[in-house]
Image 1 (cartoon, rainbow, N blue to C red):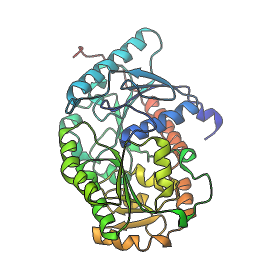
Image 2 (cartoon, rainbow, N blue to C red; image 1 turned 180 degrees about the horizontal axis):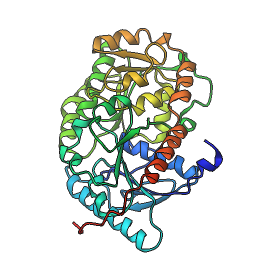
Image 3 (cartoon, rainbow, N blue to C red; image 1 turned 45 degrees about the vertical axis):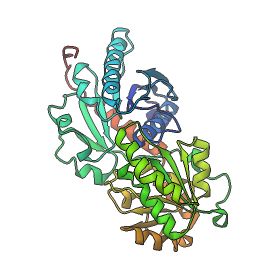
Image 4 (cartoon, rainbow, N blue to C red; image 1 turned 120 degrees about the vertical axis):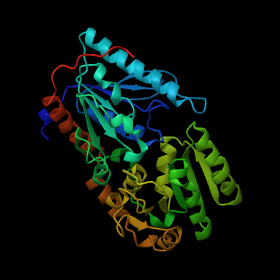
Length: 371
């Protein structure tokens, strides 16, 4: 991409998942991708605005749509508030003569409102098809297009006429790469990192560590949903108490996360869901750390078996893979991350997609009545 092509000079509104803040420390994958992408697009010359919870920290302008959720099971109220504020912002910017060129929705729920304004809207689908309400894909507004984050995910949306293609996720390599040459001998214990919920299965990581007789650091966040908290209380907390070599770091700072990644012997990815991507596996590779992951969804496209880690099917397979972890070359992990997981490449690919969508801009969409 030439310098002229990199300077898009577009006004882009990014719509975040409304539950929590967007920051470098975010635990959710969609929030992390948005933070990383918006940082790169601002670097490349676009004028970026992020509609997110108050307290978010972004590269461009923050439009705070309300406070993040502090009470459990408050998502529906917060999502309505968030959506109303976003529609209001888009309309106000248009009347002020500073309209956005494009809305990029990472919230997973805003795009059905796009028919209320005359702008192209790109919805990045971060989840498997089954995680979305079917009604969200009925009567999709004419100004909405979609993108997926992996080919395996895109197969589940093959019937979606508005699907524009795949843009793979990336991570900030400059923020993660080790300051010095990786030293395998100084690494100790296992790491599990992410959003703590049943489908991510951190309880299996605790079981693997216990049976392998290795320390485990469990790091992440429990979202404010009753069923997530119940899972933590019933399945995770008791195992943490029973294992003397298991520790828990609740929503670590980015610096702490970087340290944990660089010190781990291996990162465990125990998700039972058909993962559409895995930022944790990408971050591990960028930190020169091997990954042992269940071969679900897109993980076989992210973890290079025998090169950056091992793909497994069972807890027993994972324990056997730990015994082979010294076979993984840390420099190979770094090379793989540089070649495949660059945030700059992700941003360039989104930039091309933006241009294509803007070139295909439909005839004016008459705003519907305010809901």
